[in-house]
Length: 355
Image (cartoon, rainbow, N blue to C red):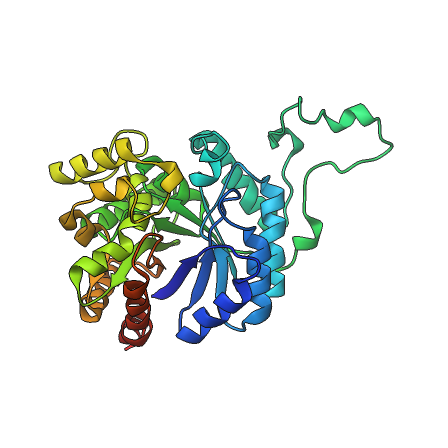
């Protein structure tokens, strides 16, 4: 199972951070794409590529709204060229990136169309102009220019012939899981570390592929996880509480909890949704962080001493996950506890999973 770490997209710090992550033994680094809160992800990934030799590099995650599919394909393929084939493209419907533009996540129809176009561009193939949804009030049709000759369709010619960048879709609800199962190279579940919920997600994805005439096992499965490693359980929970609010909220974003949830978990998710403050996004000292009970944190995240974290990760690997993207300590957590957590993960958890 691949072990990736998620971090911010810092132009000035990306190279150093990537070197540290690579030296620590991680398989890859994902950077966020949220233009109002972080730097440009592709600039950060390009800098990281030049500073490392084996580390996987990707977005965790971009979205289908703030960039045209052609621009996204060109950007991540550029990173792939610089890194000699180490790039992946993680994408979802958008959260904070859209909230800071006054928008909710992308509509499902738009998201699925975007994924189809993105995969087409990444293969070096052509997208019909009729399928490109640039509004006429933003730019009129090219026919108004009365050109002697023009491209017949939209194709990124310089991509053709190279290795295609894998596309990973962040998914929590049944409809997005189904879309991801049909159009992604890997489904990255945002369902927490709960075995029952992940089992449900994997089964749904395989069922969707089988019904579409596709190989149920012809796609990878991974998960975004919050992990807090500490011998003090209260400290371990405090490390992940802020980040967990973000991922848990995806399962109840539109009012109805996705996947199997108990009555108690549904109450926690409902409280999380109604108390969520986007201005305190990912913060452990936020209003929403206070809605998460210890029992909820213990199941939806991985928290505790190294041996427990290793056991939980192996349990998820046994479900069929071949990759996890781990978020560690989030803003608002005590730095002293965060330092202990980082040391335990690198010194105990990563080596423990390699044996």
